[in-house]
Image 1 (cartoon, rainbow over the protein chains, first blue to last red):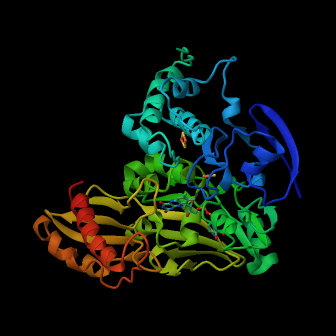
Image 2: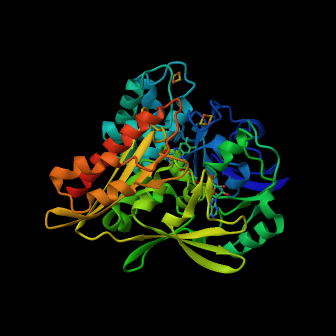
Image 3: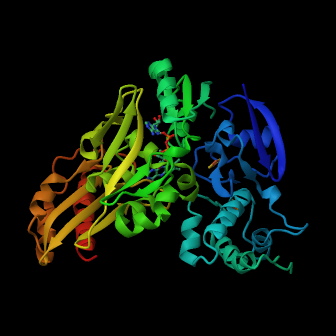
Length: 162
Length: 283
Ligand SMILES: Cc1cc2nc3c(=O)[nH]c(=O)nc-3n(C[C@H](O)[C@H](O)[C@H](O)COP(=O)(O)OP(=O)(O)OC[C@H]3O[C@@H](n4cnc5c(N)ncnc54)[C@H](O)[C@@H]3O)c2cc1C
Ligand code: FES
Ligand code: FES
């Protein structure tokens, strides 16, 4: 067992974990964050995407011990001042989801994209989300959601709910 | 899909990593970004008893302009190689190739050193490094040595690294204004590995090709140079490229799998080499 410490959605957590414990399972089972989805478990679907020190990673392919000392952000931690994050609100507005299974990962991958590239083209959005699979939407409305959110993220403004 | 239990140590430095590897013999494995190793451990195709984590060895994370070449620390991540201004300016092939690896999440974790050490013929960076005639710096219990990329890849997932050695640095040349490059990666779906890939680094003089170096992805058990095509391309001009690359698959031994038959891979090697050389001569 190893003692690790990480900040998850702004709160510090200390835990004793087996080295083989995946960050995904640590977040879901030890910390009870069901918004980190467990999909393929083979690094393909992206449902488990969280931010690690501000960058998107697939939490099924990171050991919890590798995240010792890291700052982790899940979909639960991105609301700002009690309002949905622009990317969350934009997914809602544009119907960027159907069953919702891929959504937390899509949102976190989109948040990471907009940090790295605040003004992405449609093509850049599609390429940046290539590690996230959606079996429902056909991606069109997901791309629209990111396009809608981008200017609000640049201005740090919430998207008004319709 | 959970790996078999293992011991875990954090290396404080390269020397500490070498010491830990020495203590545990070939039971131990280095952990870099974990994006090749952890997936195979989860599938239980690998079950090392000990992982030595290089993730905290910050002095392996750098990209430095060394005058005639660029030195890259082994723990530099794909996303950093992709974005680095010095590489983009002087060794665009490497930055571009890194941008095609997997997806953004994979590039936020995977490292150049891990990609090379894993030695997978389907990886993109190794064929670029072959075409660039890169050099690798390796440190072990008896000190440091330098190996040419062309001598490094031995067999399927086998490299020149001994179990107690650490790849520390990758050295790539700065490409001059008469040198063009291209990487043509062929895959069927976004995020996929290359069915076949071809890298070209081409030196031009007076409108024709003086030397061409071609690296092939996924055309055998190791990344390969297309040496027959390289010879035929020497002295070729724009009009004779298509003929010169007709033997780009000579000396390769591609496999047949769900993505492509061996025959189709040979076809792709010829087509992608032509496209790569044509693009390289025009930029
Ligand atoms: C979904 C997915 C898609 C991918 N797509 C692509 C792709 O399209 N193209 C591509 O090229 N790659 C692809 N990859 C692989 C990715 O590039 C990996 O990051 C890379 O191959 C391994 O780097 P790593 O740092 O993760 O190494 P690790 O997985 O940590 O290590 C790999 C191996 O190298 C050894 N090792 C690591 N560092 C050193 C060192 N410094 N010295 C000695 N030995 C060392 C380890 O012991 C291990 O055996 C993909 C991976 C995933 C999960
Ligand atoms: S569960 Fe991690 S990528 Fe699918
Ligand atoms: S909304 Fe169902 S998988 Fe994307």
